[in-house]
Amino acid sequence: MEARDLEILSNFYAHKLFTDEACYIDELPLGDDRILLCKDVIETLKKHSVEQIVDVIKIGHQPFDIHTSDISQFSDLMACVLKTPYLIIASKLKDISYRQMGYLLLQSPKKEMAYIKYGENQAKTAAQIGLCSVDKGKINISYMGIVFTKLTKREQQELTPKLLLYIPIIQNYFAANKDHALIQKYLNQLSVSTQVRRMRSINTLIAKIEQSCK
Image (cartoon, one colour):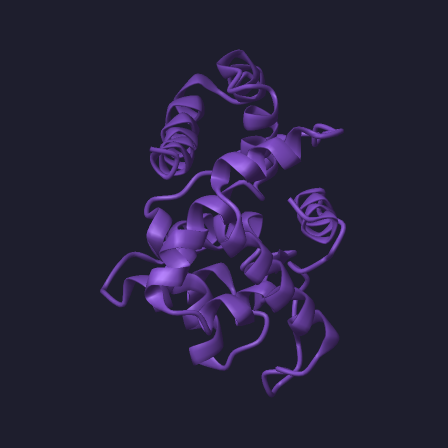
């Protein structure tokens, strides 16, 4: 692997490039330095396999601190990856609420709390992947999210497992040679009933990454 690619990937997965920051500019800033940086990251990700990326992550890996809010929970992974960033941009809204996000995603009659919880879970997971920003319950598109929505469907699908490795708890797991005990340690912070739901989501993320290695 070229030194430049190694540097880009190392800094990206260490969350040192800030590609997941919210973009508040009304017009999509396609010439903005951070947009160009995201394009560079995407092109670098395309060049390397998931296995190669995991090897890069392991080099000098500093485990992320994992709190209960960092443990992923979602209903539909592809809604988090493929729908959420598109809908944020298409809505032309800023500081989208969980209820608004849930409505945009579901587009069907639901109780108020159903909209809120669905919107919250999908948006928070999309933010963990780096495709949007969630700050104090307000959802906005990220610089990486803008670039990601410009890709073809095939490119998005091929990049998804690589972007899932951006999630701290998932990155810690693969850096620790798939240590299931580590995942359980994080889950132990939660109630037993919540552990079951979160474990289902964690398993989905892990399976999606591992499938791309076959």
